[in-house]
Length: 127
Image (cartoon, rainbow, N blue to C red; front, side, top):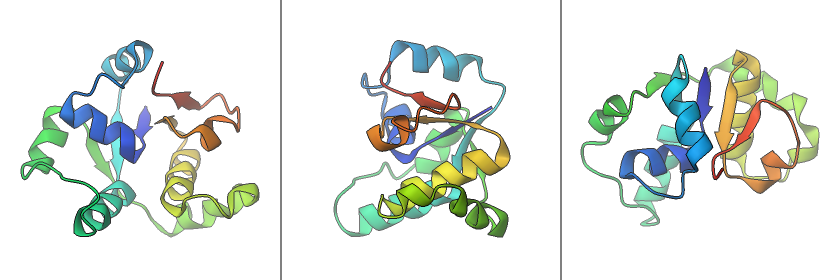
């Protein structure tokens, strides 16, 4: 089971070739592919700021890509404490990291800071 970070979700729904071959294979074979409610918040904020243009049929595209919504809860918020060295890193990335860790999911990301943690469950989306 795998949680996609926000960039990877976007790449998946727009069919970007930035998503690597191994990542595509992993997504195709995963027993569960999830989108955090945190990603939905990040999408909304970026769109409101004019930094991102999302398709109007976002929910349908997520469903077509086989991505299921996963709610972020208080126990996920408490999981942020597991990564004190990232306190100054992007808050959305830290929440997605905690979400994946607490739920025992792999995290598919292109974020170099997260990949530098060298955790086996943090997977490079560009490969």
